[in-house]
Structures are given as structure tokens and as C-alpha cells.
Length: 258
Image (cartoon, rainbow, N blue to C red; front, side, top):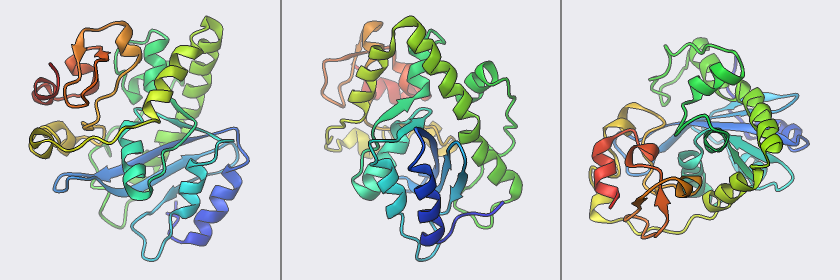
């Protein structure tokens, strides 16, 4: 399994994927020592093609990827999309759209708050994921075939998950609920860093150990139907599901929620 390390190869992949109705997307990054995460790997999967992109490859231009993210004819499917979107906005100014977040969709469909990727894949795709490569240092090269296979599985298994969640949303008539959440997610407002965000609140312990760690813009939305907390960092009056629903670190939740 090879990484896509040239602009020409990336352009060829994105040209194929631009003809799909939807593509599944994920990123791997490191953010232990930096305020903004360092993008280390991009995973894409479509109906007929998939690939792993090396954004650290010398001379590679990620413009074809960002053009795909900006293609309104192709739905971009993520799981827990906020940090992936944060990285893309920081790197290119592009907010991917349209977007489908399977974590939010799973909540709307009644699978519980902030359902994990492994759990939803096991339930809807019937696949047990090997977690042994979960804490890989994605900035190191070369990556082993096992690490690359693990990374690619994040988008391969996301395809049946998306299709089943989409069918459930259509069946229950809850698709407008999700669309409202995605409109919020893809319309970020600039947030000036506060002292708390510059310090431990912006990079809590879970972010240093888990690629799905905290992201400083607190999510809102479907959670507003069920909760009481208010996001003080974002300056929003929207209520949220619970302090723990958007961050695995309770210390962060105490700092950011009223």
C-alpha cells in the first residue's frame, strides 16, 4: 500500500472522486506541541477509488484535495468532523461542503451521545476494528502497511455506516434535523483565542493522546434539543448536550462551559 506523494497522483484520484455522489474523508494529525494541529495524513474513499495522501511529501500541492472539498456536487462524509474541518480551514481557508457527520447523524438516529467510530462501525457495518495502531505517531515516515491499512479502514468502513444512517434518517423524517446541524458546522465563526484557549483548555490531555481530542470551537446543535449547558468560549446562547458530550477531558469541559 503506497501513499500518494505527488500532486499529479493526487489530482488523478480527486478527478475520479469528483464524479461520485459522496466521498468519505478522514485526517490524521499531531498536535502535542503546536497550537494548530499538524496535518500528517488524509484518507479518502469513493465508490471506485480510495487513497491515502501524504501532505508531508516534499513538493506536494494539496489544491486538488481542497477543490474536491469545495465541490458542492460531492457530499463529504466524516465521523466527528469538527477537527478535520478545523485543519482544512487553517490550511486552505476552505470549509468543506456539503457535509454529513456520522457521529451527529448517529445521535439524531438514537445511538447515544458522541458515539465512537469503532462502536458505530461494529453496529452498522458488522466489522471489528483492530485498534493496535490507534496511537500511531502519524508524522513519522515510513508508515507500516499495518498503520496504513488501519488509516484507510477509517474511510472504507464509513461508507456502509453512512448509507445505513442516511436510510434511517429518511425513514424517520429526521434528515432536516441533521441538515440544521451541518449548516452550523460548516458556517464557523472566527473565535478570538482567550487565555484559557491558549493554555491547557485548548490542548488538554485527551488531545495529546487521541487524534479525536478536543477542538476549541464548541459544537452546537441537535444537542440543543436535549441539554442545559451554555458555551461560554463561543459566546453563544445555544445549549449543549452535556460538558462531556463534546470533549473527552472533563477538565476542558469545566473551563469551557458555564
